[in-house]
Length: 273
Image 1 (cartoon, one colour):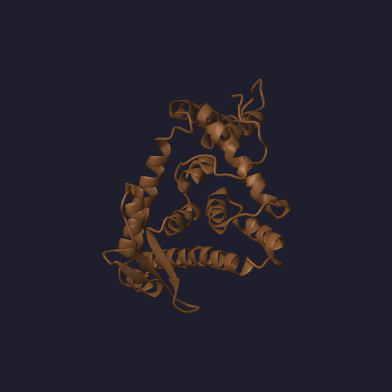
Image 2 (cartoon, one colour; image 1 turned 90 degrees about the vertical axis):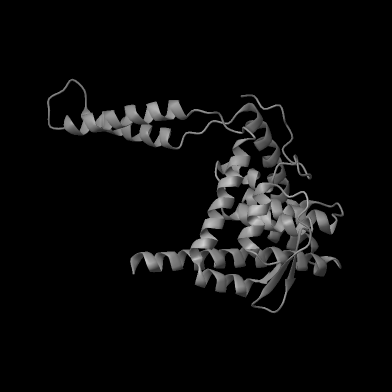
């Protein structure tokens, strides 16, 4: 498809799709970075409030859940359970007592976020084409192995190599729609801008910096953007306030990794026990 969007860099969020759908647009799946970005989006929109208790613990509190969609509500359920406010240390205790509930809520959010992203139709439906290609590749792979020690007019090794490559090709084959290519071109332009953020001379508002950090998680360039912000604003009087925003993002980034690691470690412990 020929993309109509031509700009290589843009300094604005190009659409109002959920931030987790940006991750889906690039990867055709929802990952943990999209989870973190979605939590930060709730903080940005003041649906929940995040505060630091000390260097080891943080508090989140529900503010307003009005106008949240189903995936947002499932995310709130994942974090709070049936509480209106909760410390991250208490979430860890909850995981220690019942890791299955936490992982089930996590899975429910992933499933709903994936469904909502699929409804945006960024990818073509080529399942039947993929299945046919995989079946033919497997048949070729098996036949080439069976014919290795037989006299044939063609090389079984050649068929084996072709079948192996085609199998991997069809397994990972995804084709975007016109809408998908157009949206990706726009978010590629945003990512290019963020990757060169230190070269920007405009005065950017604090809220906009926060939005950039949120989207950079799903765009996969969060660490790069932090370095660019540091280069651009390290001698600016506003940097202290920007550092507070970065600290919030870092806290969510690290805390969610710790929570998920704890839940999966508990699951693996009981699985192998």
